[in-house]
Amino acid sequence: MISERDVLHIAELADIGIIREELDEFTGQFNDILDYFDILDQVEAGAGAETGLYNVFRDDEVVPSLPPDEILGNAGETEDGFFRAPRVM
Amino acid sequence: MGIFAFSAPDPCNAFITRIPEAEYGDGKLAGVSIAVKDNISTKGIPTTCGSKILEGYIPPYDAHVVELLRAEGAAIVGKTNMDEFGMGTTTENSAYGPTLNPADRERVPGGSSGGSAAAVASGMVAMALGTDTGGSIRCPAAFCGIVGMKPTYGRVSRYGLVAYANSLEQIGPMAANVPDISLLLQVLTCHDPRDSTSITAPYTHTPDPDIHGLKIGVPEEYFGKGVDPRVASIVWEGISLLERLGAEIITCRMPSMDYALAAYYVTCMSEASSNLARFDGVRYGPPADPKKQWHESFQERRRDGFGKEVRRRVMLGTFALSSGYYGKYYAKAQSARRNVAADFSRLFSEVDVLAGPTMPTIAFRLGEKSDPLSMYLSDILTVPANLAGVPAISVPCGKVDGMPVGLQIMGRWCADERVIDVAYAFEEGVSA
Image (cartoon, rainbow over the protein chains, first blue to last red):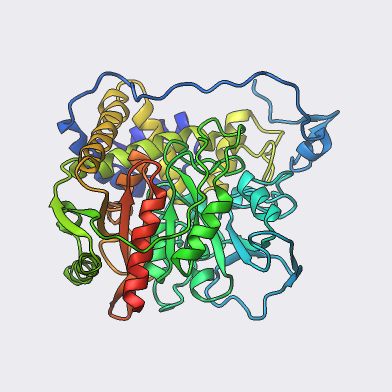
């Protein structure tokens, strides 16, 4: 069982804003869904994440890229050719 | 050459953006109007992914598939409605309102590529692109009565597709008939170095309806609990038609179906929790408040910009990857995923393709699936192909209560040609 406190903690980890009124609904749904996921308990743990996949590399060649003004064109706030983000500290 | 212009309104809300006048070019798709799902980047045309968080975003580049369509003369006529970021089975989870099923506007078109399916089914466009992470092309194709295909993973470049669950999703064709699917797939399959999972396996096939001697496996689990008996019955009739056309039908078992759906949801939620971290209001979409502290601004932006299903999946994915739970959820899901792939390998050493229903039921009524888990459960028959990366198609197979039902054909890795042949044989057999 996960509690409303757990859901608030997950929301904080995920940086997903959550309002008080939604907490009850999310908590109930999370418990239903996680109960369903318990079916995975019957699966034997495999040999790590080995999947037969391999990395695909390419040569690091300089190729034309998009002009900076086009990249910045969708941003809300820019300054001197940079994105402007909220302060971290 | 010429211009495409819509001659009628959009009563099913299939489109988020329509282009007033789209130009045709020369090539294999000259004169063909194509609608593109709104999570595929189109230079100069808004791309919202069905989300408020990308409202107003105009991509500065085309997705690889869009470059290929334009190069072959297709007119890109608009961007279709979808469940936000592809997260849903009904196209109700869109910030731009639900799409309605052209066969019955009280019902959903399926999802998440519901707008693309409705646009084709209502005759607004000839063909469309969808994306399929756990059935998002095949489900709406089945519910709307058209053909939709998820190609082999890696055969179509994902460059320019707004990522939701990279290891599962593929762009694929949707059309009214199998030859059109085949034609569109010819254009879409082209190696692209900008997608590191892109393989070199161009599809150059012409559909061949001769299926004499072909072995078709029918997993019992595809007719198990939760499958509407009326859907099961009509799909069995379809499989009998394939038998009359010369195929050999072999019933078989797929034990990993017990946990395939859970493995799918843990995997896609985990990948989503990472992929969707990029939507912070800094580089695109309605801006975050730069005067506020980072986390506060970030959380506010995502609370207001994402719908509930997206937030649910991002949170559950974060949980499944978090310290202390990774082993129980994510790691187990990856083991389960390998078991699903092993089931397919074993079955494909005995049969050429697998057949069953695409969806367990006909299209739901609008609002019918209000509980998330009950909606997830309806994806049970489509997610195995995504977990294993194998090709799968849905082709119309009659009606129940006036609503279309889809027959699903799944094939070996990179045997998209064979899957298309069986679907074509079926389509020709039905109309004969």
